[in-house]
Image (cartoon, rainbow over all chains, first blue to last red; front, side, top):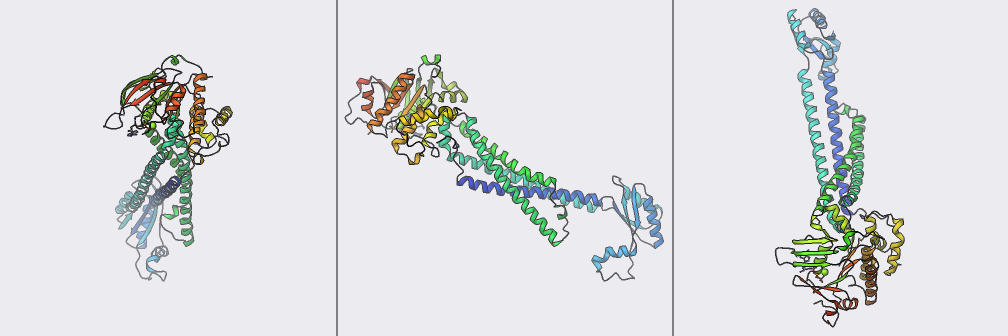
Amino acid sequence: MSSSSPLLPKQDAREAALFFVVSALCFLAALAGLCARSAYAAADKWTDRVTGEITVRVRGDDAAAARAAMIVSSVPGMQEAHALSREQAEDLLKPWLGAGGVPADLPLPHLIAAEAAPGASGVADSVAKALKAADIDATVDDHVVFSADVARATDSAGLVALAAVALLGATAIAVIAFATHSALLARRDIVEVLHLTGARDGFISSLFERRFMMLGVEAGTSGALLAFAAAAFILFVVKQSDQKIWLLPQLSLSLADGLILGLTPLVAGIAAMLAARVTVLRSLSEML
Amino acid sequence: MRERDDSLDEPAVRFDRISLSYGPETDVLSDVSMSLAPGSMTFLTGPSGAGKSTLLKLAYLALRPTAGRVSLFGVDTGRLKRPGLANLRRRIGVVFQEFRLLDHLTAYENAALPLRVAGDHERRYRDDVVELLRWVGLGDRMDAKPATLSGGEKQRVAIARAVVVKPDLIIADEPTGSVDDDMGDRLMRLFRELNKRLNTTLLIATHDLAMVRKSNADVLRLADGMVVRQPAMAMPEAGAGSETQ
Ligand SMILES: Nc1ncnc2c1ncn2[C@@H]1O[C@H](COP(=O)(O)OP(=O)(O)OP(=O)(O)O)[C@@H](O)[C@H]1O
Ligand SMILES: [Mg+2]
């Protein structure tokens, strides 16, 4: 005999269903968050790696290629430049022509791999001008088009993931608000008796806020743990099959991922609490 | 013992030209004016569906009148903000016609609910609640949930909950409707004790005319949306002691 029983009865079936729905939404939102994060990281790494790289294709004999390499390396803002040997060029072609070999008499273009200093701009243009001035027939490719494509692709993947996170978050909040409302209707007798006994609105709403914040935190935690397990599973499968899929090398679990996973239960808890508060106070305001 | 304040010279309940309708049809109450002196004991009678529960709901601030003014302890309740209304409600003990116990709480916890709402600590009120429940004959049912209580036992828990804070005003809707005559007399004695010792104002709706006659209290008779005050002795003789139709 003690008055330690909570004023709200224990979870009922309705709240168990809500727990499942919120967990699922949190799982999807956290996973979308991880995807957005990894897409951004991938875009960063790719553009980092690619910008600065300049490839020069020289048409002409070995002497022209050697002269071109010297000119390229002397352009201001150039960090490093070297002509690729025939073996190196053949290496590059292997994936297309097979390891069996590049026919010895196949004329290969002379390639110069160069790298501009980080932050230097317009280097590719200077290279093109310098080569033209020296009357060397060459094509300069600074991968700008390619890296812009990569950035655009990963940016839009990130944006889609962010939109998914926003949508899932909004859905979760709406579902929580709706469920709070129906839980409140089921508990209207309790709310009314407390109200008529002289309980303040804040007292009554805090009962529901606490209940639904706990539900949000617990459901958010289980959703985040599931998302973590899913991400770890994907990572494991990828490492096992040893495939170099272009986005996945970035899908290692980083600090930012930890933040996303840790924030999920927190946001779910706060969303549930606020939804409960608004719903309870609104329905109390309909009572005298 | 509660501090007495100057509001206690004012009528505990005062209706000024109250009308109430639940819908666009006829009024349940039309232009009702009445007042209850502090420390008075009043029965509210009238046929079933006359509007007794409705009148009580207006008095315990569960309903807003369609027109008119409800004042409690000299305070015009229409002018109060929500915290002020909550404070007034804490001075009123209500026995609802349908009891309205919380199903997941024990009899003891239900009876102690107003104390808990008021923020009291259990160690301070525990003995009082236990004693009160013994007094209404529920000493061995304190840990029972409402679902396992009889109608009369539930009613007694509801009465214990209404009186446990020693309120200034007790409003009871058919508080003895589910108990036998002996228990009814015992519960009425509890009300009268509070009335005499603590000057608690009582407003009790009932069909039980025998009980009304025995108590020698004021009577408000409600019919056709209007209230007529009758001296206790002038009650019509209704053979069966009940006027339910
Ligand atoms: N919430 C409501 N909505 C609509 N009509 C209502 C509502 N509550 C009561 N009524 C109607 O108002 C009238 C008065 O009801 P009330 O409960 O006050 O009667 P009563 O005198 O307490 O009756 P009883 O003696 O049977 O308890 C009835 O006709 C009833 O149908
Ligand atoms: Mg009634």
